Image 1 (cartoon, rainbow, N blue to C red):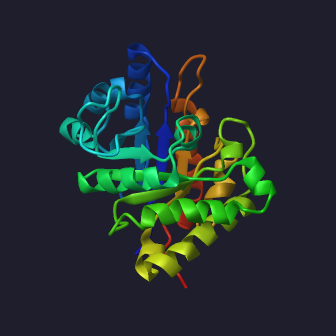
Image 2 (cartoon, one colour; image 1 turned 135 degrees about the horizontal axis):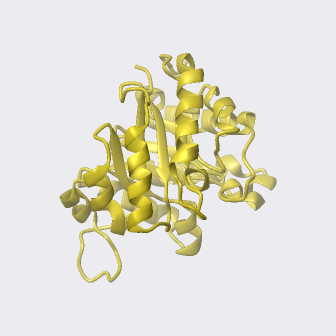
Length: 270
């Protein structure tokens, strides 16, 4: 079975009501391939989730940027998986490097969060990635394998997980992994899934790339055999005008229309 291409936009901590409305309006008017070809998910800040969901076209979906590790309660400032389900939000991003580094979320903590979100019916974009120091020391695969292992140990199914490889050194820096570097890590992650979760999981799990993705580099990245899409951060918005749709639409058009055969392909793990 082929892996459907996935384009996600992480808007991070940006925007106002009026700016978000403008973004959604343009996304709604964009001519893009059907959801049979590509899955598009946007991830606005928590406070805008109901607004975006109410206005966004039905073939695009919405993701939260985080949720708590267990059922809600006396956890000031947190958002529970149950709350997201109650709002009808289907996706959540977990394990993003900004939370791993700034809030000291460990591999085990992220694994527990992924498992709990799945248990409540959410789909998860699970992020993994290495720092520049880790890459330069040659430990990239050891790092991302450990991060993936912590998730694999807590989940019984990968059906509702998209794995996002985001090299920390490329997030928001303007640096980007070369297509060969991205493919190398994606291929190794797929081999890890093959060895530790089985042939079917390895063949069907989408592994997407994030890290300074933009309209200039997305086409070549998308031609890589094991790159199944993108999680776009900085390039999905321009903070000074918060016009998220510009590069978002460029990505959809360049990647999907110009390389349609590449990712409409049926990919089988050898």
